[in-house]
Image 1 (tube, helix red, strand yellow):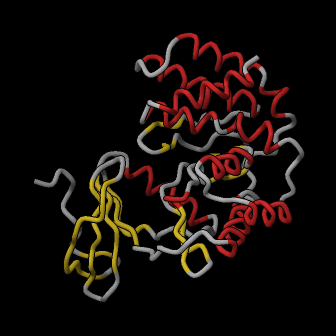
Image 2 (cartoon, one colour):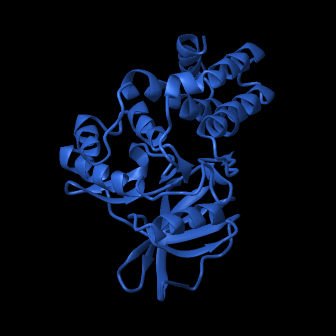
Image 3 (tube, helix red, strand yellow):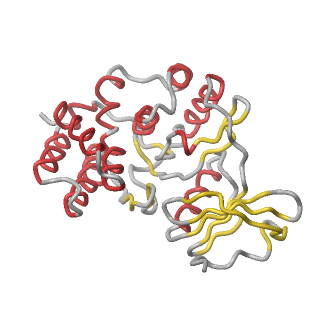
Length: 279
C-alpha cells in the first residue's frame, strides 16, 4: 500500500492517465506520471518534500532553470518532467558556468537563509549570520561533525580535528565573497543536460554562501572540469589558492554529509582533509 497521499486528480490542469516507478530518492519512491495532454510529470513521495518545493520555487523566482512545481503537500511533490540524458560535455559545462555565474550574482543580506533547508535527507540549519567563518564553522562543519559523533559515525578525536580546522578558517580561506544564492548540492545527478545545454537543475539545498563552496562541490565527484572553470572565471574570476587550499577545505562539508549518510570510506576522506589542514 502506498504511504504517500493520493495523487491529485489534475496536474497543471491535466488528468493523470498512468504512472510507473521511476526510482527512489532519499525521501521515498519516485513515480513518472503520464498526463492526458501528452506531457509527463514526476511525483516524489516521502517526508520533507514541502521544503524541496519551496527551494525549487525560490530558484525559479531567481530565474534559474528548475522543474516547475505543480503540486506540493506533506508527503508529495509533483513537478514537470524535464528531459535530460545528455552528457556534461564542454558546451554543457560552459552553459552551466553561465547559469552558475548568474545565480551567484544574486546578492543576499547575510549568510544562511530565510529558513532552514535540507541537503539530501539531512537538515541544513541556516541562521542568518554576518560572518562567513562563523557560519561555515558552526552551522556546517561543526554541526555535522558533532551529530556524526553522536550517531557513532566518527569519534571524539575526529571532532577535535574539525574544531581545530574551524579555528583556522580565516587563515585558510582568506577574505570571503559577499553572500550569494547557491544551489548547494551540485553534483552530476542533479544536473540535467540535453544537446549541449543545461535543461534543469534538481534536488537543491539552497542557502546564501560564499559561492566558492558551490564551485568546490562540483569537483568532488568530477561533475565539472576545465571547460566549466574557464568559462566561470571569465564571468566571476577566482582568487588564487582556490584549487590547492579552499577547494579541499570547502569539500569537507559535503564529505561530512556523506559520512552521516553512508559512512565507510568517506570518513577516511574527511580525515585526510583534517590531517592536511587542521594543524
